[in-house]
Length: 436
Image 1: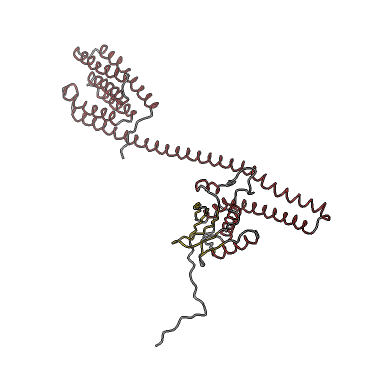
Image 2: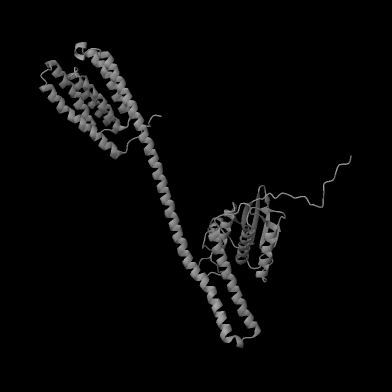
């Protein structure tokens, strides 16, 4: 596979071009001195050598001028090739000087440009034919044509080897860029996770310090009242204080349960299943017992639905959604728990009648420590973990959660994968034998 020849970074291209120009510039005084000092050269040969350096110096001037990178690279390559032609033309009887062409081809390969490398290779190959036409056999030596062909093949082989190394360099560079991009992406991900962790930690400290201190203060106050003044209270007063202690204890238990569930919800048992109707009926019954003065919860769930989720997880999902509907619904409104099957999915929706709610803003309620009314004087207490636990448990079991608000109703819908439970024939209903 050939290298692409993509542009070299500007900083590397500058020093590579400067190197080629310096090497070319060093050739000019050396070749001029050779033309003047070599006693074996004829006058015509000397003049031809000096004349051959004139285009080299002109191209070198273009190479250091304010031109585009490719134009300067081609000019520097042309100047270096002119110097090589002058060197071989001055001393044709020394075949070892033809090795200068190989150095030129290797040097201009630093540009990693197909146009520049192609110019060098074609010029080097053509030079062998030009010398054979200009100089006679006495000057070039015996078998000059064969040696010219061999040198041309060597130049082509060198170009092929350079192309292979060039391709290997590009592959290594591409791999390095991929690794660097992956490293940057990983660093960005880690940095985002650290920032998110720090935000959650700060929210946890602030929220837990308030949400746990409030019920603990209530429990302590009720206990001190019973301890110091219990004998002065009537039976109704003592029951109210004991009920307050139980309510605050229940609140603490719910907060702790949600936090522990969110921390443990990292993997699910793929074989776990739950009967949706039975779990929903249990949640509705317990929610009604916990809030006896609230309206009864309506339930319309299709019997026989089996979802791929742990029964305890489904119970907590529905319990959190029902509790949220009771707590934030309009006073006197009846929450609704509905469920059915849609293809290979089972859906369960909990709806409550409430005020206007933007669906986009509502989705943020499923983030940890997020509440619809975050102010210190909010009407409802809570840690902001209930809906987050719902999302975590459902997503861990391969499901999804959506929220929508329509016509004054807010609905949270949970979708889970349906479990195909084989129907086992009843043992008391044997298969009838055919009559013969």
